[in-house]
Image 1 (cartoon, rainbow, N blue to C red):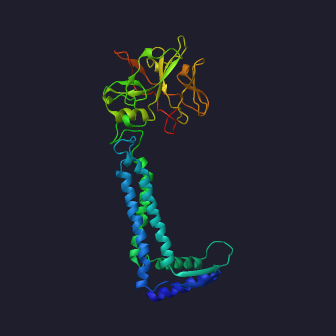
Image 2 (cartoon, helix red, strand yellow):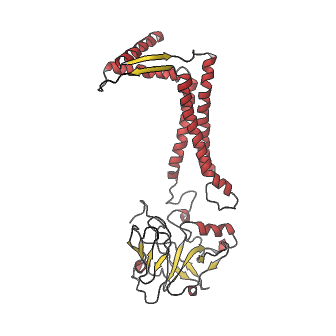
Image 3 (cartoon, rainbow, N blue to C red):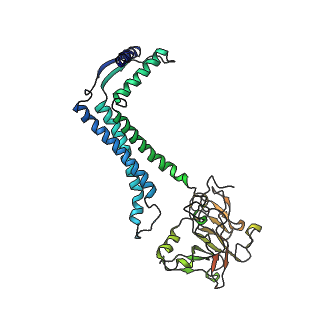
Length: 366
């Protein structure tokens, strides 16, 4: 029965070649099935599929378990943090090398030697005979590749290609497993992208701190530290961070922490908004320092008209209208930070910013 099917398939292959105007200049097997030469030819293919599977599995494990959170230079764990991306790329690269190496070696070492010349012919819908010829061609290719006769090839190909594809899928989908916008099993409310380092936790006050030459020095701000028409770049500080060099440095490097404390000139007419009542302290206002267009530092202040200018793309924000954009590509106001003064006379934040800091994104409602 099998011999009859093989003869029928061979006949269909010949008919297909003739019908398509194909001249088989050369078509012969490289090795006789079951010989030592065939086994030697198969080894590199299997080794490459094994490399694809092992490297793909390593990429998945690396993505899940390797430390990825930012570590400042000179701090313990910085070398591991630096190695995260290069090692992930190395495992993915080795997995792809395994896949392509297996395919190339399979074609060069296992598949029959074939040289064919085909004449072009008009295109059109396939006849029933052409469909049978196509099926025969696919079955013949499956046998030559070894998916049927050499089941180890089929398993190696399935495992290698499957694990390699799974590694790419895990990394691609991994970012959607836990939403950065909502609290999850590994993060609290303060660790979402809706909040910044100014978010109050456990009732601890968050003071306004200025950056000095020594990142471990804590310099808090009083109302008398700024003259009318002056400004200061400020960062959050909690008493629980005092004496902890790593936390003091991290506060200065976190991208959504920088804010600007302004002291408006006396008589400056600021638009009244009920929803912003009590967020300023007299003539003192604090707004995010990060542009809502592309995240540049908004640090140029036109005092005469009380406007902020972003130096990157010239967005302008009217401070008399709570940093509303009036010119340029920015489409959203700079978020305001509510402030007050404690019994010791130091500024502190009474809450987080009025909106997400930085560039606008599609999840953000207008």
